[in-house]
Image (cartoon, rainbow, N blue to C red; front, side, top):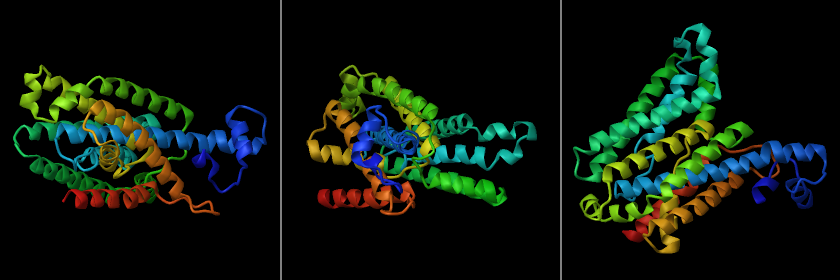
Length: 316
């Protein structure tokens, strides 16, 4: 309700409640609430849930508190896929160039990019026994994909470069109800699959050998985590752009508040905290009394980075 009430046009709380309940209200206010503010708030909830869950899965899979889809380069893979579509479309035949700018093409390219990077990281992970090396590999993938994006930026037009730049800043606005419906389906399916492997995640905390001794099929669990992470990260990156620190910070906040390592409890607490935190970041991004909205990625970084640093200092 706080998120929906904030904007350049001041709307009374009573009117907001009436609009949400389907009652008659001022037409312009109805349009603002139902077509702009409410979809934006729903997207914030979905993105917060998706990134928080992928962060928890990554930290458990790699048994590293600093792991998430952003640090390991999965978001960079999604960004590269989108960059190839938005800035590399000039290399395609003129007859199909317009198809590359469709929302569906952007979403598919983001998912494929995240899936490719994630599988490469898991393939390399088999050669390492320590997770520090794996995180370095993830950072190297991020650097490599950033270099490719820079090359594409050099050869692209100013209009395409500006479009990609604004996309990379992160924005919850201008998302259609159709895209939100697809996002809801992706999140719900991923959550239904994810909640069924929480028991296996508890076993993974003590190592793969211990989990196998309890009858956990490591290959199946890893495959489910990979697909959930890639789909959620890919769809999120395609719709709102790369959002940093939510997936890294929320699992730590959840463990700190609930003081447990039980993934069944953490699963639902991450859903709640992720949604609330991203809604809060969206509220902070609005400059009071103006129509200016700061880049969401900057706000999440400014809020998330101090949280992670304080947690590291607390745990020494």
